[in-house]
Figure 1 (cartoon, rainbow, N blue to C red):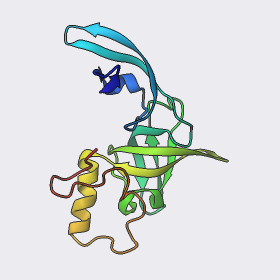
Figure 2: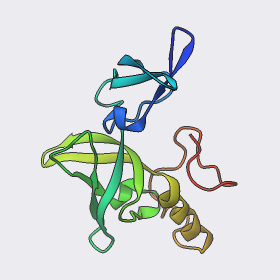
Figure 3: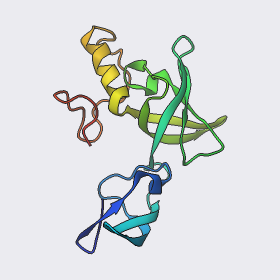
Figure 4: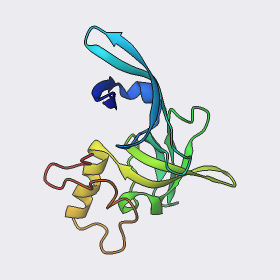
Length: 157
């Protein structure tokens, strides 16, 4: 939901076009009236490129090479390069949903601060419970936002 004039306006994930706003971000949008009420469309997140977060799906990941690629609607003509050091546990399940930031590198966009969402996040938890990884082996990803909800599994926004 987007709060506008002290009222909540529904926003569908498809109207974010791959962008992932955080609570408190300024957004620009149009309001469309539907049978269920007001809905935000043509949403634009008004933050700097460094602060911008995106939704994506892990397209491929090669654990032996230590890198993979993320597909994201915000970058329709490019796959986003990701190193295993940017993935929680150094693990990137193909098809896993994620939230990430992007930095522009010499060879193109590269994912940073990757968080696995939903079942992909659950897989990392299960691997940790089975003893994979360990102190220092889990890479980045923990401690952002509200954090992992270990009781329910997955990311708790």
